[in-house]
Image 1 (spheres, rainbow, N blue to C red):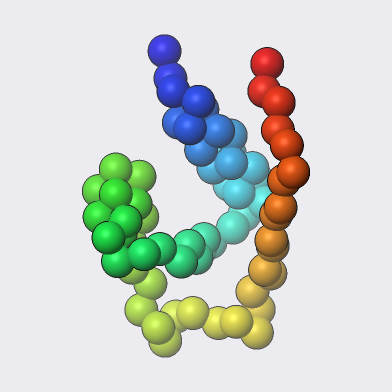
Image 2 (image 1 turned 45 degrees about the vertical axis):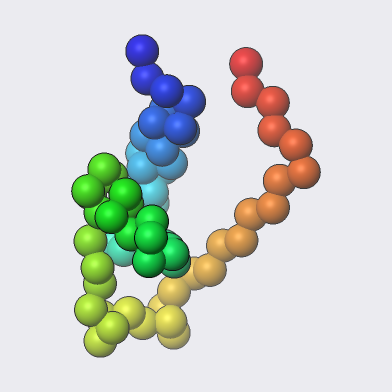
Length: 68
């Protein structure tokens, strides 16, 4: 059985793929970088490949979430 985070991450990944997202930029603390890279398969994007002009920035703030 998948953990809740893994199930949520899988759903988010499917949505991003359906939207044809090429890069998902995730700011991470240096201490957490290994987790994102080793556990979830993220990799560093060279700074010259990061284009903020064509990026869509999404901020989500949830007051409360109920998952059943």
